Every structure is written in C-alpha cells, then in structure tokens.
Image 1 (cartoon, one colour):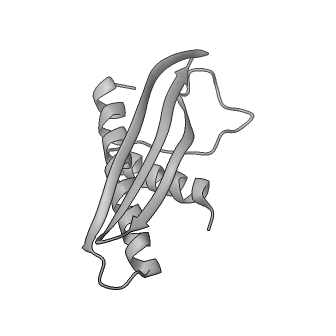
Image 2: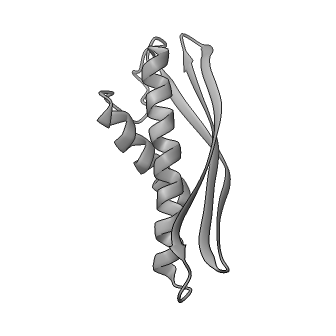
Image 3: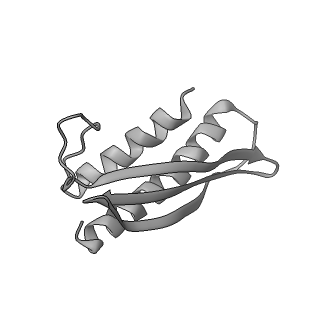
Length: 114
C-alpha cells in the first residue's frame, strides 16, 4: 500500500546484493557519502488478455555535493495470461517490473564505480 516504501525496499535489496551497504540519510553523514534519490514517475498495472505492469523512476546519485549519476529506469513486467483478473496477478506483474528496474540500477551503480 506504500509505493515509495515498496520501491525503496526493492532498491535496497538489489544494491545490497551487489555489495553496497545501504543506510537511511543521517545528520552525521559526510558529503563524501553517495546519496541515492529516486523520483517515481509510473506505477501502472492492467489486465486485458494478459497482465501488464510498468514501473518507472528517475534515479540520481550525489557525492561531495555534485551529481555523479542519473538515469531513468522504465521496465515492464507480466505474469502472462489473464485467466481471472486478480490482485495477485497485478501484484506479481508489478513486482517483476520493479525487480528488473532495481537490478538494472544496482548493476549501473556498481559499473559506475560509485
């Protein structure tokens, strides 16, 4: 029910999976600590013959007060044929879309050497 928390949890899991320690922003954090910010642009699900979902967000990373990375992540997901429109079908399709976007972000951040 909390879309920003759902996306934050997925991003945290994928970043930790590639070796990053993810923390919440704090007062004592130094400027040299990279800070990831995301703006959610789309979270959408539909069901006609198949379930379709789309998750999109803009991610940027600042370090030492300067933006060092930014990219739009926009992925689709589907669990396939819509036999009976259900919350489960929508949820799984949305989760697939988010997982694909979160994995791509984690790989991009790692490859950028941030």
